[in-house]
Image 1: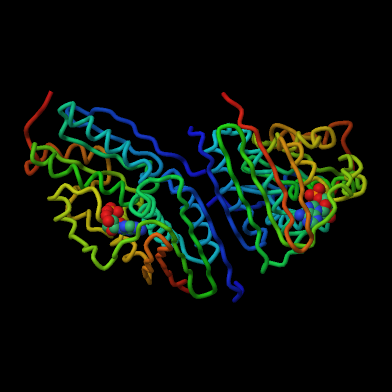
Image 2: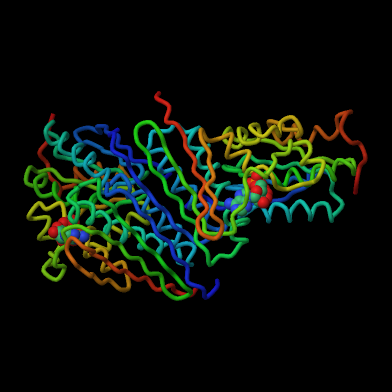
Length: 125
Length: 125
Length: 144
Length: 144
Ligand SMILES: Nc1ncnc2c1ncn2[C@@H]1O[C@H](COP(=O)(O)OP(=O)(O)O)[C@@H](O)[C@H]1O
Ligand SMILES: Nc1ncnc2c1ncn2[C@@H]1O[C@H](COP(=O)(O)OP(=O)(O)O)[C@@H](O)[C@H]1O
Protein backbone atom coordinates (compact mmCIF):
# COMPACT_ATOMS: atom_id res chain seq x y z
CA UNK A 1 0.00 0.00 0.00
CA UNK A 2 1.18 3.51 -0.76
CA UNK A 3 1.09 5.77 2.28
CA UNK A 4 -2.32 7.39 2.23
CA UNK A 5 -3.14 11.06 2.32
CA UNK A 6 -3.04 13.21 5.44
CA UNK A 7 -3.44 16.93 5.98
CA UNK A 8 -2.48 19.00 9.03
CA UNK A 9 -3.20 22.65 9.77
CA UNK A 10 -1.44 25.21 11.94
CA UNK A 11 -1.04 28.98 12.22
CA UNK A 12 2.22 30.93 12.09
CA UNK A 13 1.22 34.46 13.08
CA UNK A 14 -1.54 35.39 10.64
CA UNK A 15 -0.43 32.79 8.10
CA UNK A 16 -2.39 29.55 7.85
CA UNK A 17 -0.09 26.63 7.11
CA UNK A 18 -1.53 23.46 5.54
CA UNK A 19 0.85 20.53 5.41
CA UNK A 20 0.17 17.77 2.86
CA UNK A 21 1.37 14.20 3.42
CA UNK A 22 1.23 11.23 1.03
CA UNK A 23 -0.55 11.49 -2.29
CA UNK A 24 -2.84 14.18 -3.62
CA UNK A 25 -4.90 12.76 -6.48
CA UNK A 26 -8.53 12.84 -7.66
CA UNK A 27 -9.44 10.79 -4.60
CA UNK A 28 -7.84 13.00 -1.95
CA UNK A 29 -8.04 16.45 -3.62
CA UNK A 30 -11.55 17.14 -2.22
CA UNK A 31 -10.12 17.04 1.33
CA UNK A 32 -7.50 19.61 0.36
CA UNK A 33 -10.13 21.76 -1.33
CA UNK A 34 -12.28 21.67 1.83
CA UNK A 35 -9.28 22.66 3.97
CA UNK A 36 -8.58 25.75 1.88
CA UNK A 37 -12.26 26.67 1.85
CA UNK A 38 -12.24 26.36 5.68
CA UNK A 39 -9.34 28.78 5.96
CA UNK A 40 -11.11 31.28 3.73
CA UNK A 41 -14.34 30.89 5.69
CA UNK A 42 -12.30 31.57 8.85
CA UNK A 43 -10.98 34.80 7.30
CA UNK A 44 -7.48 33.50 6.56
CA UNK A 45 -6.28 34.60 3.14
CA UNK A 46 -2.56 34.14 3.69
CA UNK A 47 -1.96 30.46 3.14
CA UNK A 48 1.23 28.42 2.95
CA UNK A 49 0.97 24.88 1.64
CA UNK A 50 3.89 22.85 2.97
CA UNK A 51 4.49 19.90 0.64
CA UNK A 52 7.54 18.42 2.39
CA UNK A 53 5.86 15.04 3.04
CA UNK A 54 3.89 15.06 -0.23
CA UNK A 55 5.05 12.20 -2.48
CA UNK A 56 2.69 12.55 -5.44
CA UNK A 57 0.39 15.09 -7.06
CA UNK A 58 -1.90 14.78 -10.08
CA UNK A 59 -3.88 17.46 -11.92
CA UNK A 60 -6.77 17.11 -9.46
CA UNK A 61 -4.42 18.36 -6.72
CA UNK A 62 -2.97 21.09 -8.92
CA UNK A 63 -6.51 22.19 -9.75
CA UNK A 64 -7.14 23.10 -6.11
CA UNK A 65 -4.26 25.58 -6.13
CA UNK A 66 -5.43 26.90 -9.49
CA UNK A 67 -9.03 27.53 -8.48
CA UNK A 68 -8.37 29.46 -5.23
CA UNK A 69 -5.33 31.62 -5.93
CA UNK A 70 -7.15 34.39 -7.83
CA UNK A 71 -9.75 34.93 -5.13
CA UNK A 72 -7.12 34.93 -2.37
CA UNK A 73 -5.01 37.48 -4.25
CA UNK A 74 -8.06 39.73 -4.72
CA UNK A 75 -8.41 39.69 -0.93
CA UNK A 76 -4.75 40.68 -0.52
CA UNK A 77 -3.80 37.15 0.36
CA UNK A 78 -2.02 34.39 -1.58
CA UNK A 79 -1.14 30.70 -1.62
CA UNK A 80 2.60 30.17 -1.25
CA UNK A 81 3.90 26.67 -1.88
CA UNK A 82 7.01 25.25 -0.21
CA UNK A 83 9.31 22.25 0.18
CA UNK A 84 8.44 20.31 -2.98
CA UNK A 85 10.03 16.91 -3.44
CA UNK A 86 11.74 16.63 -6.86
CA UNK A 87 9.05 14.40 -8.39
CA UNK A 88 6.23 16.69 -7.23
CA UNK A 89 8.20 19.76 -8.29
CA UNK A 90 8.56 18.48 -11.84
CA UNK A 91 4.78 18.04 -12.09
CA UNK A 92 4.31 21.67 -11.00
CA UNK A 93 6.92 22.79 -13.50
CA UNK A 94 5.75 20.87 -16.54
CA UNK A 95 2.46 22.80 -16.39
CA UNK A 96 4.01 26.22 -15.79
CA UNK A 97 2.95 26.60 -12.15
CA UNK A 98 6.34 28.09 -11.27
CA UNK A 99 5.46 31.20 -13.32
CA UNK A 100 2.15 31.80 -11.59
CA UNK A 101 2.73 30.54 -8.05
CA UNK A 102 5.24 31.63 -5.46
CA UNK A 103 7.19 28.41 -4.78
CA UNK A 104 9.75 28.52 -1.93
CA UNK A 105 12.32 26.05 -0.63
CA UNK A 106 11.34 26.19 3.03
CA UNK A 107 8.28 26.89 5.12
CA UNK A 108 10.02 29.77 6.94
CA UNK A 109 10.79 31.40 3.63
CA UNK A 110 7.20 30.97 2.43
CA UNK A 111 5.75 32.46 5.63
CA UNK A 112 8.23 35.38 5.56
CA UNK A 113 7.38 36.09 1.92
CA UNK A 114 4.04 37.55 3.04
CA UNK A 115 5.89 40.40 4.77
CA UNK A 116 7.98 41.39 1.78
CA UNK A 117 7.10 44.75 0.19
CA UNK A 118 5.62 43.30 -3.03
CA UNK A 119 3.34 41.02 -1.03
CA UNK A 120 -0.01 41.96 0.44
CA UNK A 121 0.25 43.95 3.67
CA UNK A 122 -3.24 43.87 5.07
CA UNK A 123 -3.12 42.06 8.40
CA UNK A 124 -5.84 39.95 9.93
CA UNK A 125 -6.80 38.71 13.39
CA UNK B 1 7.11 -0.22 -5.89
CA UNK B 2 7.92 -2.29 -2.82
CA UNK B 3 11.53 -1.92 -1.76
CA UNK B 4 13.40 -4.69 -3.54
CA UNK B 5 15.60 -7.33 -2.00
CA UNK B 6 19.17 -6.74 -0.82
CA UNK B 7 21.61 -8.94 1.04
CA UNK B 8 24.80 -7.90 2.85
CA UNK B 9 27.47 -10.09 4.42
CA UNK B 10 29.95 -9.49 7.22
CA UNK B 11 31.97 -11.46 9.77
CA UNK B 12 31.80 -11.07 13.55
CA UNK B 13 34.71 -13.20 14.79
CA UNK B 14 34.11 -16.62 13.31
CA UNK B 15 30.40 -15.97 12.80
CA UNK B 16 29.18 -15.08 9.30
CA UNK B 17 26.37 -12.54 9.45
CA UNK B 18 23.97 -12.26 6.51
CA UNK B 19 21.61 -9.31 6.67
CA UNK B 20 18.39 -9.46 4.63
CA UNK B 21 16.64 -6.31 3.42
CA UNK B 22 13.26 -5.97 1.69
CA UNK B 23 11.30 -9.01 0.61
CA UNK B 24 12.35 -12.64 0.47
CA UNK B 25 9.99 -14.51 -1.86
CA UNK B 26 10.24 -17.10 -4.64
CA UNK B 27 11.95 -14.47 -6.78
CA UNK B 28 14.67 -13.45 -4.34
CA UNK B 29 15.15 -16.68 -2.33
CA UNK B 30 17.73 -18.06 -4.82
CA UNK B 31 20.06 -15.16 -3.94
CA UNK B 32 19.77 -16.00 -0.27
CA UNK B 33 20.35 -19.68 -0.99
CA UNK B 34 23.50 -18.83 -2.94
CA UNK B 35 24.77 -16.64 -0.09
CA UNK B 36 24.44 -19.45 2.45
CA UNK B 37 26.06 -21.90 0.06
CA UNK B 38 28.95 -19.42 -0.35
CA UNK B 39 29.48 -19.28 3.41
CA UNK B 40 29.54 -23.07 3.62
CA UNK B 41 31.95 -23.30 0.69
CA UNK B 42 34.15 -20.80 2.53
CA UNK B 43 34.15 -23.06 5.60
CA UNK B 44 31.77 -20.91 7.67
CA UNK B 45 29.23 -23.03 9.49
CA UNK B 46 28.23 -20.52 12.17
CA UNK B 47 25.74 -18.25 10.49
CA UNK B 48 23.55 -15.47 11.83
CA UNK B 49 20.76 -14.20 9.59
CA UNK B 50 19.88 -10.66 10.63
CA UNK B 51 16.32 -9.92 9.50
CA UNK B 52 15.98 -6.41 10.94
CA UNK B 53 15.33 -4.78 7.54
CA UNK B 54 13.34 -7.74 6.17
CA UNK B 55 9.74 -6.71 5.53
CA UNK B 56 8.30 -9.91 4.03
CA UNK B 57 9.03 -13.62 3.82
CA UNK B 58 7.18 -16.39 1.98
CA UNK B 59 7.70 -20.15 2.08
CA UNK B 60 10.40 -19.95 -0.57
CA UNK B 61 12.49 -17.90 1.88
CA UNK B 62 11.65 -20.15 4.82
CA UNK B 63 12.67 -23.12 2.69
CA UNK B 64 16.25 -21.85 2.50
CA UNK B 65 16.57 -21.93 6.29
CA UNK B 66 14.93 -25.35 6.35
CA UNK B 67 17.20 -26.96 3.77
CA UNK B 68 20.56 -25.88 5.26
CA UNK B 69 20.16 -26.11 9.03
CA UNK B 70 20.61 -29.87 9.35
CA UNK B 71 23.88 -29.92 7.41
CA UNK B 72 25.24 -26.95 9.37
CA UNK B 73 24.39 -28.58 12.69
CA UNK B 74 26.12 -31.80 11.60
CA UNK B 75 29.22 -29.69 11.06
CA UNK B 76 28.93 -28.20 14.57
CA UNK B 77 27.49 -24.99 13.18
CA UNK B 78 23.98 -23.53 13.06
CA UNK B 79 21.79 -20.83 11.57
CA UNK B 80 20.62 -18.37 14.22
CA UNK B 81 17.92 -15.92 13.20
CA UNK B 82 17.54 -12.47 14.75
CA UNK B 83 15.61 -9.20 14.77
CA UNK B 84 12.37 -10.32 13.11
CA UNK B 85 9.75 -7.68 12.39
CA UNK B 86 6.34 -8.69 13.79
CA UNK B 87 4.85 -9.58 10.40
CA UNK B 88 7.84 -11.74 9.45
CA UNK B 89 7.92 -13.29 12.92
CA UNK B 90 4.32 -14.41 12.66
CA UNK B 91 5.10 -16.22 9.39
CA UNK B 92 7.97 -18.07 11.12
CA UNK B 93 5.71 -18.93 14.02
CA UNK B 94 2.67 -20.13 12.12
CA UNK B 95 4.81 -22.91 10.62
CA UNK B 96 6.54 -23.91 13.88
CA UNK B 97 9.98 -22.50 13.03
CA UNK B 98 10.36 -21.18 16.58
CA UNK B 99 10.59 -24.78 17.86
CA UNK B 100 13.34 -25.80 15.48
CA UNK B 101 15.33 -22.61 14.97
CA UNK B 102 17.17 -20.45 17.46
CA UNK B 103 15.44 -17.06 17.06
CA UNK B 104 16.97 -14.13 18.99
CA UNK B 105 15.93 -10.52 19.52
CA UNK B 106 19.23 -8.92 18.58
CA UNK B 107 22.24 -9.65 16.42
CA UNK B 108 24.61 -9.48 19.43
CA UNK B 109 22.54 -12.08 21.22
CA UNK B 110 22.51 -14.33 18.17
CA UNK B 111 26.28 -14.09 17.69
CA UNK B 112 26.92 -14.67 21.42
CA UNK B 113 24.66 -17.72 21.39
CA UNK B 114 27.35 -19.66 19.52
CA UNK B 115 29.61 -19.46 22.60
CA UNK B 116 27.06 -20.76 25.06
CA UNK B 117 27.76 -24.26 26.45
CA UNK B 118 24.95 -26.02 24.57
CA UNK B 119 26.09 -24.56 21.29
CA UNK B 120 28.81 -25.97 19.06
CA UNK B 121 32.33 -25.11 20.28
CA UNK B 122 34.54 -26.02 17.33
CA UNK B 123 36.25 -22.84 16.14
CA UNK B 124 37.32 -22.05 12.63
CA UNK B 125 39.84 -19.72 10.97
CA UNK C 1 16.06 -8.20 -20.96
CA UNK C 2 14.42 -10.59 -23.41
CA UNK C 3 12.85 -9.55 -26.70
CA UNK C 4 9.69 -11.35 -25.64
CA UNK C 5 6.64 -9.14 -25.25
CA UNK C 6 5.08 -9.09 -21.78
CA UNK C 7 1.38 -8.43 -21.22
CA UNK C 8 -0.37 -7.19 -18.09
CA UNK C 9 -4.02 -6.33 -17.47
CA UNK C 10 -5.78 -4.75 -14.52
CA UNK C 11 -9.59 -4.43 -14.12
CA UNK C 12 -10.87 -2.33 -11.22
CA UNK C 13 -14.18 -0.73 -10.29
CA UNK C 14 -14.50 2.84 -11.56
CA UNK C 15 -13.69 4.72 -8.36
CA UNK C 16 -11.00 7.25 -7.53
CA UNK C 17 -10.24 5.05 -4.52
CA UNK C 18 -8.51 2.69 -6.99
CA UNK C 19 -6.17 5.27 -8.52
CA UNK C 20 -3.45 4.46 -5.98
CA UNK C 21 -3.63 0.81 -6.97
CA UNK C 22 -3.51 1.67 -10.66
CA UNK C 23 -0.39 3.80 -10.07
CA UNK C 24 1.35 0.94 -8.27
CA UNK C 25 0.46 -1.44 -11.10
CA UNK C 26 1.86 0.93 -13.68
CA UNK C 27 5.00 1.82 -11.77
CA UNK C 28 5.83 -1.84 -11.25
CA UNK C 29 5.52 -2.45 -14.98
CA UNK C 30 7.50 0.66 -15.87
CA UNK C 31 10.34 -0.41 -13.61
CA UNK C 32 10.27 -3.93 -14.98
CA UNK C 33 10.34 -2.56 -18.52
CA UNK C 34 13.57 -0.74 -17.70
CA UNK C 35 12.34 2.87 -17.49
CA UNK C 36 14.34 5.11 -15.16
CA UNK C 37 12.69 6.60 -12.07
CA UNK C 38 11.79 9.87 -13.85
CA UNK C 39 10.04 8.08 -16.71
CA UNK C 40 8.27 5.73 -14.31
CA UNK C 41 6.94 8.85 -12.58
CA UNK C 42 5.72 10.28 -15.90
CA UNK C 43 4.02 7.03 -16.86
CA UNK C 44 2.32 6.80 -13.45
CA UNK C 45 0.98 10.34 -13.74
CA UNK C 46 -0.23 9.97 -17.34
CA UNK C 47 -2.13 6.78 -16.56
CA UNK C 48 -3.59 8.30 -13.36
CA UNK C 49 -4.90 11.24 -15.42
CA UNK C 50 -6.33 8.93 -18.09
CA UNK C 51 -8.11 6.78 -15.50
CA UNK C 52 -9.35 9.76 -13.48
CA UNK C 53 -10.94 11.06 -16.71
CA UNK C 54 -12.64 7.73 -17.33
CA UNK C 55 -13.95 7.57 -13.74
CA UNK C 56 -15.23 11.15 -13.75
CA UNK C 57 -16.16 11.88 -17.35
CA UNK C 58 -16.75 8.60 -19.18
CA UNK C 59 -18.67 7.00 -16.30
CA UNK C 60 -19.75 10.07 -14.29
CA UNK C 61 -18.60 8.43 -11.05
CA UNK C 62 -20.79 5.33 -11.51
CA UNK C 63 -18.75 2.84 -9.45
CA UNK C 64 -20.57 -0.17 -10.90
CA UNK C 65 -18.52 0.33 -14.09
CA UNK C 66 -15.05 -1.06 -14.79
CA UNK C 67 -11.80 0.61 -15.77
CA UNK C 68 -9.44 -1.63 -17.73
CA UNK C 69 -5.72 -0.93 -18.06
CA UNK C 70 -3.66 -3.04 -20.48
CA UNK C 71 0.11 -2.80 -20.67
CA UNK C 72 2.65 -4.47 -22.91
CA UNK C 73 6.34 -3.86 -23.33
CA UNK C 74 9.31 -5.19 -25.23
CA UNK C 75 12.89 -3.94 -25.25
CA UNK C 76 12.01 -0.67 -27.01
CA UNK C 77 8.51 0.50 -26.16
CA UNK C 78 5.96 0.36 -23.40
CA UNK C 79 2.31 0.58 -24.49
CA UNK C 80 -0.54 1.30 -22.11
CA UNK C 81 -4.20 1.34 -23.11
CA UNK C 82 -6.98 2.62 -20.88
CA UNK C 83 -10.34 1.26 -21.88
CA UNK C 84 -13.90 2.22 -20.95
CA UNK C 85 -17.41 1.53 -22.23
CA UNK C 86 -18.72 4.93 -21.19
CA UNK C 87 -20.19 7.90 -22.95
CA UNK C 88 -17.16 8.79 -25.05
CA UNK C 89 -16.27 12.29 -26.31
CA UNK C 90 -14.56 14.07 -29.15
CA UNK C 91 -10.98 14.65 -28.02
CA UNK C 92 -10.29 16.97 -30.98
CA UNK C 93 -13.02 19.32 -29.70
CA UNK C 94 -11.31 19.75 -26.31
CA UNK C 95 -9.20 22.87 -26.53
CA UNK C 96 -6.28 23.20 -24.21
CA UNK C 97 -6.37 26.54 -22.31
CA UNK C 98 -3.25 28.28 -21.03
CA UNK C 99 -2.64 28.08 -17.29
CA UNK C 100 -3.10 31.83 -16.72
CA UNK C 101 -6.52 31.68 -18.44
CA UNK C 102 -7.58 28.75 -16.26
CA UNK C 103 -6.41 30.56 -13.12
CA UNK C 104 -8.24 33.75 -14.11
CA UNK C 105 -11.40 31.72 -14.72
CA UNK C 106 -10.95 29.96 -11.33
CA UNK C 107 -11.07 26.57 -13.05
CA UNK C 108 -10.06 23.51 -11.08
CA UNK C 109 -9.76 21.29 -14.15
CA UNK C 110 -8.52 21.27 -17.70
CA UNK C 111 -4.95 20.10 -17.17
CA UNK C 112 -5.29 16.34 -17.52
CA UNK C 113 -5.14 15.80 -21.28
CA UNK C 114 -2.32 18.32 -21.63
CA UNK C 115 -0.33 16.41 -19.01
CA UNK C 116 -0.91 13.09 -20.76
CA UNK C 117 0.30 14.48 -24.10
CA UNK C 118 3.34 16.08 -22.50
CA UNK C 119 4.37 13.02 -20.51
CA UNK C 120 3.97 10.28 -23.13
CA UNK C 121 5.69 9.78 -26.49
CA UNK C 122 2.49 8.84 -28.32
CA UNK C 123 -1.17 9.43 -27.42
CA UNK C 124 -4.15 8.33 -29.51
CA UNK C 125 -7.88 8.08 -28.76
CA UNK C 126 -10.23 5.53 -30.37
CA UNK C 127 -13.79 6.42 -29.49
CA UNK C 128 -16.91 4.26 -30.03
CA UNK C 129 -19.36 5.75 -27.48
CA UNK C 130 -21.03 3.19 -25.18
CA UNK C 131 -19.16 0.35 -26.88
CA UNK C 132 -15.47 0.82 -26.35
CA UNK C 133 -13.38 3.95 -25.88
CA UNK C 134 -9.64 3.49 -25.76
CA UNK C 135 -6.76 5.78 -25.01
CA UNK C 136 -3.49 4.37 -26.36
CA UNK C 137 -0.31 5.70 -24.84
CA UNK C 138 3.28 4.81 -25.64
CA UNK C 139 6.53 5.53 -23.82
CA UNK C 140 9.88 4.82 -25.46
CA UNK C 141 12.37 2.92 -23.32
CA UNK C 142 15.53 4.99 -23.41
CA UNK C 143 18.73 3.01 -23.29
CA UNK C 144 20.97 4.06 -20.40
CA UNK D 1 -18.89 0.50 3.22
CA UNK D 2 -21.54 -0.30 0.64
CA UNK D 3 -23.16 -3.72 0.23
CA UNK D 4 -22.24 -3.56 -3.44
CA UNK D 5 -19.84 -6.24 -4.59
CA UNK D 6 -16.54 -5.00 -6.01
CA UNK D 7 -14.56 -6.94 -8.62
CA UNK D 8 -10.87 -6.73 -9.45
CA UNK D 9 -8.78 -8.74 -11.90
CA UNK D 10 -5.03 -8.87 -12.54
CA UNK D 11 -3.35 -10.75 -15.41
CA UNK D 12 0.45 -10.99 -15.35
CA UNK D 13 3.05 -13.11 -17.10
CA UNK D 14 3.97 -16.25 -15.17
CA UNK D 15 7.22 -15.10 -13.57
CA UNK D 16 8.31 -14.82 -9.95
CA UNK D 17 9.35 -11.26 -10.85
CA UNK D 18 5.63 -10.40 -10.72
CA UNK D 19 4.95 -11.73 -7.22
CA UNK D 20 5.72 -8.32 -5.66
CA UNK D 21 3.12 -6.73 -7.93
CA UNK D 22 0.59 -9.41 -7.10
CA UNK D 23 1.13 -8.80 -3.38
CA UNK D 24 0.56 -5.06 -3.81
CA UNK D 25 -2.63 -5.70 -5.77
CA UNK D 26 -3.93 -8.03 -3.08
CA UNK D 27 -2.96 -5.85 -0.15
CA UNK D 28 -4.66 -2.83 -1.70
CA UNK D 29 -7.85 -4.83 -2.10
CA UNK D 30 -7.62 -6.29 1.41
CA UNK D 31 -7.26 -2.84 2.91
CA UNK D 32 -10.12 -1.50 0.82
CA UNK D 33 -12.28 -4.44 1.91
CA UNK D 34 -11.73 -3.44 5.54
CA UNK D 35 -9.33 -6.18 6.70
CA UNK D 36 -6.98 -5.17 9.50
CA UNK D 37 -3.22 -5.09 8.88
CA UNK D 38 -2.69 -8.64 10.21
CA UNK D 39 -5.33 -10.11 7.92
CA UNK D 40 -4.04 -8.13 4.96
CA UNK D 41 -0.64 -9.72 5.65
CA UNK D 42 -2.18 -13.19 5.72
CA UNK D 43 -4.05 -12.61 2.48
CA UNK D 44 -0.92 -11.29 0.79
CA UNK D 45 1.08 -14.35 1.84
CA UNK D 46 -1.60 -16.88 0.88
CA UNK D 47 -1.98 -15.40 -2.60
CA UNK D 48 1.80 -15.17 -3.05
CA UNK D 49 2.05 -18.90 -2.22
CA UNK D 50 -0.78 -19.78 -4.58
CA UNK D 51 0.76 -17.80 -7.45
CA UNK D 52 4.29 -19.09 -6.78
CA UNK D 53 2.86 -22.62 -7.09
CA UNK D 54 1.23 -21.78 -10.41
CA UNK D 55 4.43 -20.21 -11.75
CA UNK D 56 6.66 -23.10 -10.64
CA UNK D 57 4.45 -26.17 -10.73
CA UNK D 58 1.51 -25.51 -13.06
CA UNK D 59 3.61 -23.78 -15.72
CA UNK D 60 7.11 -25.04 -14.87
CA UNK D 61 8.50 -21.50 -15.12
CA UNK D 62 7.26 -20.95 -18.69
CA UNK D 63 7.00 -17.14 -18.67
CA UNK D 64 4.90 -17.07 -21.85
CA UNK D 65 1.95 -18.24 -19.71
CA UNK D 66 -0.42 -16.02 -17.73
CA UNK D 67 -1.39 -16.00 -14.08
CA UNK D 68 -4.86 -14.58 -13.41
CA UNK D 69 -5.96 -13.33 -10.00
CA UNK D 70 -9.63 -12.41 -9.47
CA UNK D 71 -10.86 -10.77 -6.30
CA UNK D 72 -14.32 -9.77 -5.12
CA UNK D 73 -15.52 -8.53 -1.79
CA UNK D 74 -18.66 -7.33 -0.10
CA UNK D 75 -19.20 -6.31 3.53
CA UNK D 76 -18.64 -9.83 4.89
CA UNK D 77 -16.26 -11.83 2.73
CA UNK D 78 -13.29 -11.39 0.44
CA UNK D 79 -12.90 -14.03 -2.28
CA UNK D 80 -9.72 -14.50 -4.28
CA UNK D 81 -9.33 -17.00 -7.12
CA UNK D 82 -6.00 -17.85 -8.71
CA UNK D 83 -6.43 -19.30 -12.17
CA UNK D 84 -4.06 -21.16 -14.48
CA UNK D 85 -4.31 -23.28 -17.65
CA UNK D 86 -1.34 -25.44 -16.71
CA UNK D 87 -0.77 -29.08 -16.00
CA UNK D 88 -2.97 -29.37 -12.93
CA UNK D 89 -2.48 -31.83 -10.05
CA UNK D 90 -4.41 -33.76 -7.45
CA UNK D 91 -4.36 -31.63 -4.32
CA UNK D 92 -5.76 -34.49 -2.20
CA UNK D 93 -2.68 -36.57 -3.05
CA UNK D 94 -0.29 -33.94 -1.64
CA UNK D 95 0.43 -34.93 1.93
CA UNK D 96 1.56 -32.28 4.32
CA UNK D 97 4.79 -33.26 6.14
CA UNK D 98 5.69 -32.00 9.60
CA UNK D 99 8.39 -29.33 9.74
CA UNK D 100 10.90 -31.56 11.58
CA UNK D 101 10.55 -34.23 8.86
CA UNK D 102 11.13 -31.64 6.12
CA UNK D 103 14.18 -30.29 7.96
CA UNK D 104 15.60 -33.80 8.47
CA UNK D 105 15.08 -34.50 4.77
CA UNK D 106 16.76 -31.16 3.86
CA UNK D 107 13.72 -30.17 1.83
CA UNK D 108 13.41 -26.56 0.71
CA UNK D 109 9.72 -26.86 -0.19
CA UNK D 110 6.49 -28.33 1.00
CA UNK D 111 5.17 -25.47 3.14
CA UNK D 112 3.08 -23.54 0.63
CA UNK D 113 -0.23 -25.36 0.66
CA UNK D 114 -0.14 -25.69 4.44
CA UNK D 115 0.35 -21.93 4.74
CA UNK D 116 -2.55 -21.22 2.38
CA UNK D 117 -4.88 -23.46 4.38
CA UNK D 118 -3.76 -21.94 7.69
CA UNK D 119 -4.06 -18.34 6.56
CA UNK D 120 -7.41 -18.40 4.75
CA UNK D 121 -10.90 -19.22 6.03
CA UNK D 122 -11.83 -21.36 3.01
CA UNK D 123 -9.64 -23.03 0.38
CA UNK D 124 -10.91 -25.12 -2.53
CA UNK D 125 -9.27 -26.40 -5.72
CA UNK D 126 -11.09 -26.96 -9.01
CA UNK D 127 -8.81 -28.80 -11.39
CA UNK D 128 -9.34 -29.37 -15.14
CA UNK D 129 -5.77 -30.01 -16.35
CA UNK D 130 -4.68 -27.92 -19.35
CA UNK D 131 -8.07 -26.22 -19.48
CA UNK D 132 -8.58 -24.31 -16.26
CA UNK D 133 -7.30 -24.91 -12.76
CA UNK D 134 -8.63 -22.65 -10.04
CA UNK D 135 -7.78 -22.18 -6.42
CA UNK D 136 -10.63 -20.44 -4.57
CA UNK D 137 -9.75 -18.75 -1.31
CA UNK D 138 -11.99 -16.85 1.08
CA UNK D 139 -11.20 -14.57 4.01
CA UNK D 140 -13.94 -13.41 6.36
CA UNK D 141 -13.99 -9.69 7.09
CA UNK D 142 -14.01 -9.40 10.87
CA UNK D 143 -15.95 -6.46 12.24
CA UNK D 144 -13.83 -4.27 14.48
N1 LIG E 1 -12.34 9.49 -21.01
C1 LIG E 1 -13.16 10.56 -21.22
N2 LIG E 1 -14.47 10.37 -21.46
C2 LIG E 1 -15.29 11.43 -21.66
N3 LIG E 1 -14.88 12.71 -21.66
C3 LIG E 1 -13.57 12.98 -21.43
C4 LIG E 1 -12.65 11.90 -21.19
N4 LIG E 1 -11.42 12.45 -21.01
C5 LIG E 1 -11.58 13.78 -21.10
N5 LIG E 1 -12.87 14.12 -21.37
C6 LIG E 1 -13.40 15.49 -21.60
O1 LIG E 1 -12.31 16.35 -21.88
C7 LIG E 1 -12.26 17.42 -20.93
C8 LIG E 1 -10.83 17.82 -20.60
O2 LIG E 1 -10.19 16.78 -19.87
P1 LIG E 1 -8.89 17.11 -19.02
O3 LIG E 1 -7.93 17.87 -19.84
O4 LIG E 1 -8.37 15.83 -18.47
O5 LIG E 1 -9.38 18.06 -17.84
P2 LIG E 1 -10.42 17.76 -16.67
O6 LIG E 1 -10.57 16.29 -16.57
O7 LIG E 1 -9.77 18.35 -15.47
O8 LIG E 1 -11.69 18.46 -17.06
C9 LIG E 1 -13.05 16.92 -19.73
O9 LIG E 1 -13.60 17.96 -18.96
C10 LIG E 1 -14.12 16.05 -20.41
O10 LIG E 1 -15.18 16.84 -20.87
N1 LIG F 1 -0.91 -24.91 -8.90
C1 LIG F 1 -0.27 -26.10 -8.90
N2 LIG F 1 -0.15 -26.81 -10.04
C2 LIG F 1 0.48 -28.01 -10.05
N3 LIG F 1 1.01 -28.59 -8.94
C3 LIG F 1 0.90 -27.94 -7.77
C4 LIG F 1 0.26 -26.68 -7.68
N4 LIG F 1 0.29 -26.29 -6.39
C5 LIG F 1 0.94 -27.25 -5.71
N5 LIG F 1 1.30 -28.26 -6.52
C6 LIG F 1 1.97 -29.53 -6.13
O1 LIG F 1 1.85 -29.69 -4.72
C7 LIG F 1 3.14 -29.76 -4.11
C8 LIG F 1 3.13 -29.08 -2.75
O2 LIG F 1 3.00 -27.67 -2.88
P1 LIG F 1 3.44 -26.72 -1.72
O3 LIG F 1 2.87 -27.20 -0.44
O4 LIG F 1 3.08 -25.33 -2.09
O5 LIG F 1 5.02 -26.86 -1.59
P2 LIG F 1 6.15 -26.50 -2.68
O6 LIG F 1 5.53 -25.61 -3.70
O7 LIG F 1 7.19 -25.82 -1.88
O8 LIG F 1 6.59 -27.82 -3.23
C9 LIG F 1 4.09 -29.14 -5.11
O9 LIG F 1 5.42 -29.61 -4.97
C10 LIG F 1 3.45 -29.52 -6.43
O10 LIG F 1 3.83 -30.84 -6.79
